[in-house]
Image 1 (cartoon, rainbow, N blue to C red):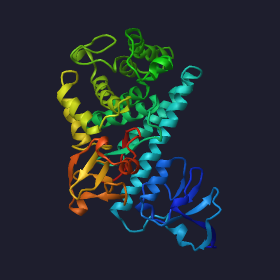
Image 2: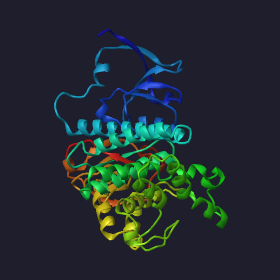
Image 3: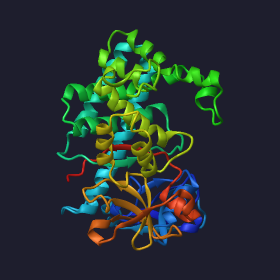
Image 4: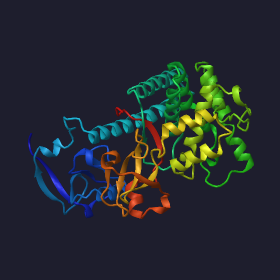
Length: 401
């Protein structure tokens, strides 16, 4: 391979707008690729926390950067090691989950854009997306959850829909539901909040308390969504029921119809539970996934089937993905992926000041989670390294148990 000229750039010279290459194996950093397009100060802080003295400048401006010739090993570090390695396999699985999540969100956006002008095209696209979700769920015998997300803190309707679909399908899979019902769950989850697009942004994005009139209008979104889909005549009644009744609770306190118990189909109950949990994480007040799960289990048992809540607890584990924790070696970390060892999940960890960031496998190290932390407990450096301001969503892991 011919030599390629790159410019060696000190970390102090990093600026948004640059494209750089990390002098690390892809198993030793949190980015999807070794080449990183820097578009935020948070990314710069993450790179500085990797413990490298420099990066290679690919594009962007820096008058002081030193041009160097690098041999082919710069390209080789992008390649996966030929031997099986847990760290490499996990890194690959994380990347794949993130890639699939982003593709699903983009596909869902395309579907939403066609639902009025081309309902048949929208239905075909959504059916294809559901098949992809189902194949990803069934790719391994024992699927786990991986933390995924977008760069934005505010979670979109489509992003929320994909995350709810993943959680609800995991519940259905744990209950051994047939593929037909898993498809209904997936399709209903993707569309469950489409009616919110009929709600004015001034209400939907309002950060202060809603007035009674605004709250009533927002609570009409299941009816709006049902009408949009029902008009096409293409969607199964089970899917329409999910869209219309995903805010119904078994105690009759939900809306729009105040249904109780057995009057709510099981697939709708599953999506209602997944939506209730995920909504706590995608709202204006971001909540720790562990705190949200504890709240759901202790305070909302009357609103959902107790057996379904128990299944969700088993799926998410003691420390659900996205939970900020303190480790027994005094490092802090964000849980990235659930594992069989519930007290030793796979984490992205750093020192208390945010330095020395790395992907860690606690079960290999004999390190355990000591306790969960609030965001306020972290230093500013740790907040940047762990990216605590990013929205929390979930996708299936392709890692073999």
